[in-house]
Image (tube, rainbow over the protein chains, first blue to last red):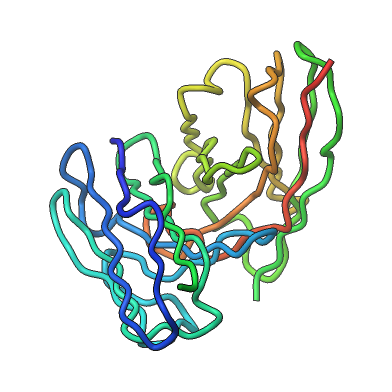
Amino acid sequence: IVLTQSPGTLSLSPGERATLSCRASQSVDSRFLVWYQQIRGQAPRLLIYATSTRAAGIPDRFSGSGSGTDFTLTISRLEPEDFAVYYCQQYGTSEWTFGQGTKVEIK
Amino acid sequence: EVQLVESGGGLVKPGGSLRLSCAVSGRTFSDLYMSWVRQAPGRGPEWVGLIKCKADGETVHYAAPVKGRFTISRDDSRNTLYLQMNSLKIEDTGVYYCATDVPYSGGGAFDSWGQGALVTVSS
C-alpha cells in the first residue's frame, strides 16, 4: 500500500491550525493507521495510532481522523515545538509502509 | 519505561555483512513484537521487518527490498533483538532503529525507539 502525504510543505505561523493529509492507494484498516512527528536528528515520535487515539503524553491539540483511503492529522493551534516533519504509516498487511512526509515550517 | 539500545553499526563495503543488536529493558521482552526501521539520509522512515513474540510463533515479515538478504531474530533469554544484514548494497545506508509497539496494537504503532545505529555501505 502506497501512502501519499500532502502538502509536501506547510508554512504556517504559531497559533494557526495545521491540516495534514494522508491518502492510501487502497483501503487501510483504521485500526492500523498511525502518525508520527520527527524532529531532525531524533527518532520518530508516535502521536496517533488507530487513526484517532493519541499516544501517551501527546497533547490534545493533536487529533486524527479518517477512514478507507483518506486520513487527516490536525494540529489545532501550532506551538513552536510542533514545527517538524510528520509521517503517516499503515500496517496490518504483511508489509508496513510510511508516507513521504509533510514538513510543517514557520511562516 | 522501555529502553532500546542498538549496537553494531559501522562502515562496510558493498556485498559485505553486518549484524545489529538491540538490547531491550523495561518491558517483558518475550511478550513484545519487535521491528527494525531504517532511515536513509534526508529520507523518511522505511520499515525493514518485524518479528512476533514466541507466543505468536516468532513469525517474521520483511520489506521487499531486504527480503532474502536480511534476517531478523531474537533471543528472549538475553532480551535482545538482532538484524543480520548480508549482501549489503549502497542503498542500505542509513540509520537503523529498533522499535516496539503500543501493547496489543498489532505490531506497527511504534511508541518506543532506540537511538539508532548508523550503517554506511561504501567502497
